[in-house]
Length: 455
Image (cartoon, rainbow, N blue to C red):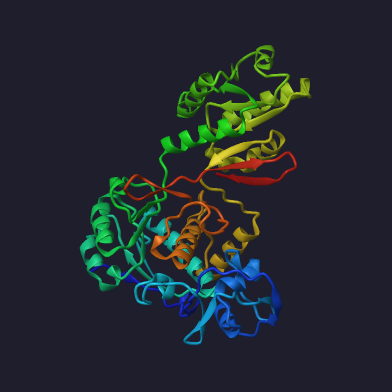
């Protein structure tokens, strides 16, 4: 029988309930000093506020990983005029479904159907992802949400029938999984029958996305990412002179991007240059514009060739200090920051990606520390970090269900969540499910700052 994993650790026992819909509070009527064991939900109830009214008056509460601590002083706003009293609990005055049917008015029931074992890499990675989900649940609990989590070990050879026969499975509002394509059809049928949202976190073949409106697919194909990157490049860097450098890497697959971009430039009558790492200094120099800023694009993502390119460009810049040179790279480059970070800053590098792991971020540091405390180990040295991915995914979807119920579709602008590592923006695929289309440029500025430009 498939083992059912439940967590009963005190850290993740989520017992509070919340009845809240976003309301505004423009004025502050006073302050409250937090006492031991007080929660955001309890304080909001004490002052006849909704959770959202209290959080709006205290924006720091929206930060992932925020904890309400004893002795903290928080703002207490005036309640919205639309707020009414129902059974002694402050609620927004709006028509809702019955409490038993509306996920906004009860606990959110979460299912995780992934390989949760330590037999191989798949299991170990998914255990870390699952732990990230639990950490997000704990953070959301501190904001007043009630969440019930059931997890099943859906290994590669698992028969899904016993899992789906568990009564708890059919009661889920949202399920994270599966990891394997062969489990997709039965899960797709199951969530469609029971009106459950299915989040596919990683790269599997899921043709059911085109017909099942309950599916969210986070993974994006390299083709889609290339096309989106070309579109965003042309929007942002239309005033640059592109310089394509052939790095003589016979193993590279980046030609799909560079050829696609060159075709688009030609279609817009935008001039560009092509040169080679083996070109003479004179020929290499002629490829660069003296009147426009230059954007260098290599046809490889490998670190050795990138190092040679920087050496070549450093020599060019030494002899032509007035040249304006930026670099446009690949997600692979994020693995080489220890080696090439100084040159990323020097040449104003832009790196397209679907994630950004920033070890210097206070949010990242806080979550890595909590992970270490809770699970007595460090996160795996992978890019992206699996625990942070799980945290972002769960925080995004559970907060969305709490605010919008089952109408939540993950579109841009539905609520303000700044991801720790992994942004999400979904678009409907015809009459089917929703596909993630998030993209960002990681920008290393000459002022030695790292910023993310989200699209």
